[in-house]
Amino acid sequence: MHRVLIPLFFILISVQASAAHPHVFIEQKTKIIFDDKGLAGFKIHWKFDEMFSVMIGEDFDTDKNSILDKNEIATIKEKAFGYIASHNYYLHIKIDDKPFAVKFVKDFNATLSNGKLIYDFFIPCHVAAIKNPKKIVLSPYDPEYYSAIYFSDGKHLLIEGADLFTIGTKIERDKSTLIYYETVNPLAIFFNFRQKK
Image (cartoon, rainbow, N blue to C red; front, side, top):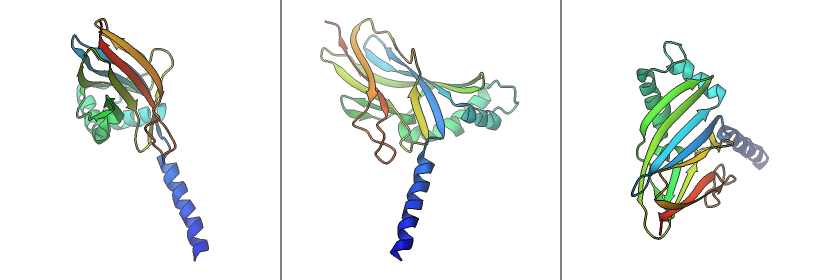
């Protein structure tokens, strides 16, 4: 009996692991937006892999002209983007080590460009600057690891409106977070900001 159960156990684990492997690959560019009070939020740019882009184009570009009109974009937002709201839209934010719930996004847009699907959207996240540094972590990941999010080479991190503040940034693995059977530390943007003295 046990000789049968042990191989079956490993088969089930293998099936679960293969199901969790990334099937969608997302290249992310991030712009950190400041206003006159402090952090205002994040502009996110996602470029999807070719296979997922083709799938979305076939399903939602109803007139097959490779141009997404406002109705097609609204449908994509509802059916191909909105479902990840329960996972913070795959963008996990901590403010001074406390989780920040991403409840909604603004200015969502979807385009098809050179065979690639692109999402652009804004995450409001208001944090007032003070004399002491405020610590922010932005970690993009799918907790189920069906989608893999990575940072592009070059200008994948930009800052807008930073003149009033002293800002430090770094990108590295978030060692406080583990996904994929607790084997993967996702990449994260770590930054701090404070009022200029």
